[in-house]
Image (tube, rainbow, N blue to C red; front, side):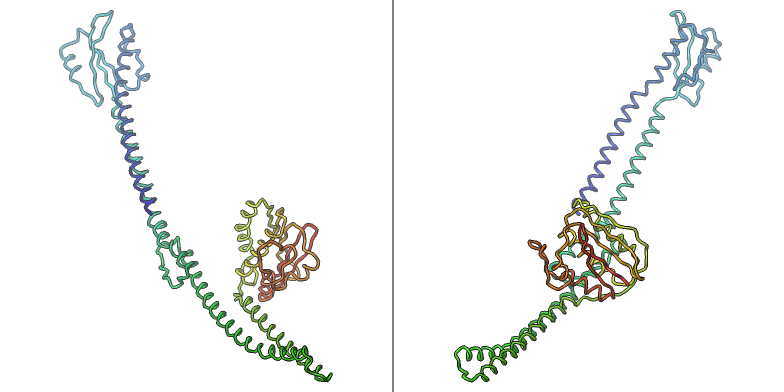
Length: 422
């Protein structure tokens, strides 16, 4: 804000300096041009002294001289009086006329001074500068109070949310420019608050589950340990007792496996606790978002990016969750593709809208291809790359929740993933 105030002060100072400089230059030029009418008078006197008739004088050739009157030496007294006292709307200069090097009457020159035009031009210039300055200052002040100041007041909100201060009050701004921004920040605050509460609940449930399972697992483990030691020390002599001990070990092992499955199921349920808001959206809105987000990214990475033709159909689903899936597919294309080409195509089949995302690169192996949608699975091509093996698994589960489908295709030049929207 301080820098912006300095910009305002600099604008005022710059205008004052420019106005003074322009005025000085203009007035200096005016003083120079003020004597131009005398140059024209001298030219006329010279031409008349060369026996040029006054009647043949063409005043259209002169800018400042408007009229020339000659007074003969033998003119009457009344004529003399009228000659010297007559006044018009123009300025007058009377000079002696010469003929053959001798004074021979007088010449009266009526002229317009360049001062009048110069002053009008000066005032016009200063007025134009003033209007321009006031307009610029008005725009700068408008930006300050309608954009800069409200944004400055809101600049601390993201930092407060990042620190976990989710109860920070978000004041509504009168400026219409920040309506959607304020709404988005408020939505983000609510989402973070809900996520935090959900995370705390999940942590509590996990601790309770671990405590419960650790207690439940301890009993079968203790039984297995006792039977294993008895068999190791050859406590049982009869074959039936040994078989009974082995059977009990197997039973308790299955019991522990059941508890492990419960833990895995609880972990998957946590991952898949994704709310879906079913609604309707136009395909063009999704395409515009894809283009705006990834066209520039691909250009920066020198990747050939192409979006195929499509019909702007009305689709059913959760556009935000669909966008998450596309983000995952694009990031996988950047991560595992060869960086040559990414193409998005649209086509219809059996009353369904299909979206195909293709990227060039080496396809996955047949073994990996059969497991790419499984949870926590990472292919052989993921070595040295960040990830947790949940991306495509979550994509499939989201598509299923939207009554859709996702499947992969191996191609000669790379891999493609097809989303099916019903």
